[in-house]
Amino acid sequence: MGKAKRSGQFVVPGDKLGVIEEFIPDSGTFVEDGAIHSENVGYILMDFANKKVSVYPTSPNLNVPKVGSIVVGNARSVQSSAAAIRMIKVGKKFISGHFTGMIHISDVSFRYTDNMFDAFKVGDLVRAKVVSDKNKTFHLSTKGENLGVIYAFCSQCGGLLVHKGRGLACQTCGYVERRKTASDYGKGTI
Ligand SMILES: [Zn+2]
Image (cartoon, rainbow, N blue to C red; front, side, top):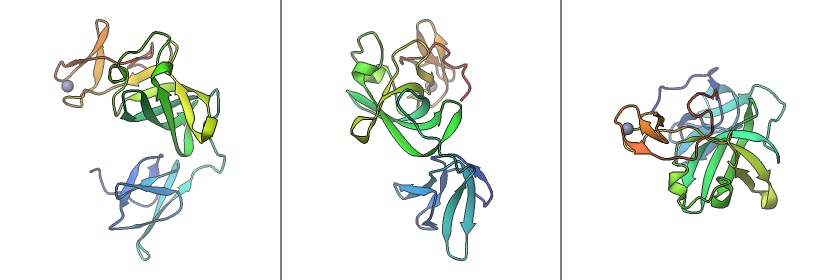
């Protein structure tokens, strides 16, 4: 658990604000597994008298993903045929709101992907393109050199993975893993 949050603190979508035992989630927040998170890029308001927590957006201009957008997000779950990406940025701007996109195994790479677990792992930061919003689901693709994982962490110890030969290795424990990386893996700004 991180440090306690204060009113006026800047947060981005997904940042943990507290738990439902302490606060009532109010505008600009969402609850996941009993924890209250920010839904917006903005500033926290903690109302201790009413035990409410809300987040005021920094900008009323909604910045949401669209077909054709390049997005950056965190891999939230990886299954044998698809990965779920919690999108945090569209282009250079943080996203207003809570959006998840799916990468199907056929959209990982121009090459055949036989194991989704060698492409993404939970916690990876991924750059992808929104290819469809059919049935109110954002479908993402990482086909192309500049798309794919931009930062990944060791599944054994959580250390940062760095390029080693044709794969990635943990800079802390040396464990070797694979990902579908973007050409600027480990160098990009988020
Ligand atoms: Zn490690």
